[in-house]
Length: 319
Image (tube, rainbow, N blue to C red):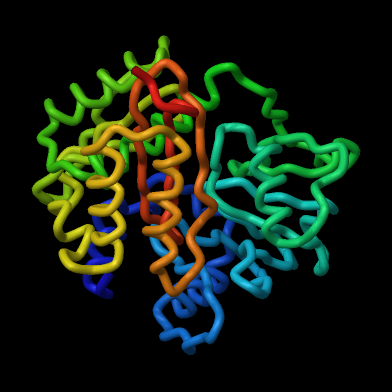
């Protein structure tokens, strides 16, 4: 994907509109902006790319664990992934040296997701883990280290469905990210997905503003049980995904091998793994969700920070 395409995505999504930056020191924000715009030195190992999902930090030293392992950071003041899960073996908000492994949510179960990231990083799981939100971010730490002011996040029977909704709304294969909706079309698509996933009590509503782009986007807010319709705020799909580029190649492989075919979850996962293996950097972990209620597998793909793929489908061939 070209630099121009990345900038187009950032302008379209405009995540700063939905983030309270008032608690972040302006100097730290300036340093973060400068770091984002600097050219990276080429590496001989696979590394994650930062894109739509990024590290939301103040006073943080960042490292990459070797061998294409999970993204990690040493927290000095306050750091973590604003749109994802942050896994800490030792809660530490104010002092240096607390290891943290972060990434986007994978399954709707943050404790299980941290187990995946810790295993990928080659370290043991968080002992006696508990999930909670703190200052608007999601963490997993030992139960005896939950900070004052945190809000516990108990297991939810609808969490997996809400996670699939999030993936579907921005899916580049055949979901929200693959189409150029008008406002009515986006609203209809979100409503149909809520029905398919059995998510009752959710609302679909426009947030009003526009930046004059041709396409309408969708933004999932699970805590509010709302899908926000973002009218005319996204570029055409071919602007978001450069034709002929590596992201388009993976999307097309998933579309041809899974969406346009009828395979089970095991075969779909193999197709996804083969497509992602062509990358020269490490994608987010691919997730398989077994769904025996359907005859054929489906797949969602998002790009943000790196490429994230989720495969859903039956464990074996169905008649």
